[in-house]
Length: 131
Image: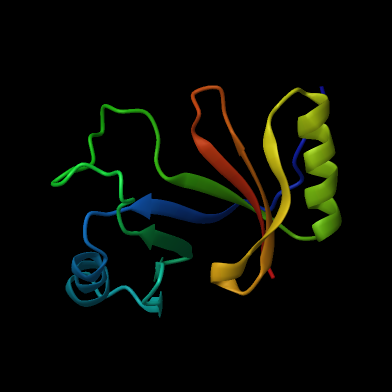
């Protein structure tokens, strides 16, 4: 079977936190990671890795904390070089019977294009434009 994605690697990791300002202080001040964007999504750089962090959803239980025994993160994103590749990947996912969003624009990050889908465990993935 041919490889579905032509990707240079991971684009970013998206995580959820209980308190965005507390996380910004921890990652930016305590750990000293450069803050690339403080809000509405905290984005910081750890070496060559970019981490995007969102606060809790309204439906999150009060005091909820991460449990490493549960499946999943907020999402994982693979880098994509060209928009045409997003469309090709969307077609390949459709052909494979995998539900996806189609190619969308991320307004919170300057309109970059992406394609979102979930694995069989419902772990969210994105194929995300580098520029």
